[in-house]
Length: 258
Image 1 (spheres, rainbow, N blue to C red):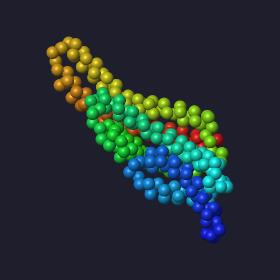
Image 2: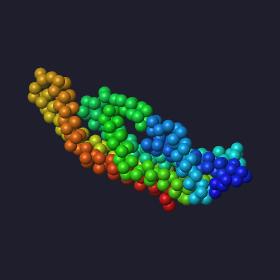
Image 3: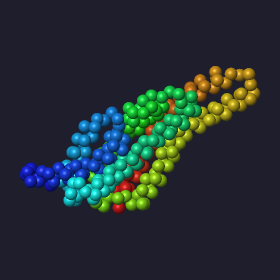
Image 4: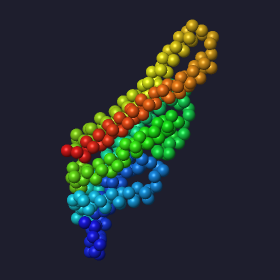
């Protein structure tokens, strides 16, 4: 318990900082919380607020000494668990980026790139649009609240001092990495299939009329067809992104459940 008496201030503060390691690591790796636009002060305040709830409602055994090998190992354990919880969700958010690469290159938008405010790195313009939509869906499905709940519940299954992830859990994280490519291709399938059919038609035209300038016809046709197909398929893509978020939250819950 966090008491107000002077003798209990230092142990309570040490326990709070120790608990904040797992929470802060999860926020660094997780989407939304780990965005470049989120100030470091906000992450620290959120980690401290959640850490106070954990210290007062969960049995947290802190290391006996501050500077010891055992303490460093337990801090590494806590950081590993937090990074794993956030990394699984980050894998799901890579799906729209894979889809944007597949769609943008076939549409001729591979050269159009901008800086993604969530990651602070150059991404295709279409990928930034899908990433923003994925973030809005994540917030609308209360994914941020579910993540906080899973981090707090992780102290029951993976208590401090015994928080090394089992080989089965590490294997599940590795296997879930393939879901980023599968979900990205699933998102890109409707638009990609239509553009593939268009490319086949353009190839047939090039065979029948070799003198025709395909660059003057094929690129505008691919761009216009891709935009129309993207507008038509976007509602289905939104449903798919919602399914991806639910699968990611389910995979994250499997890490902290027996």
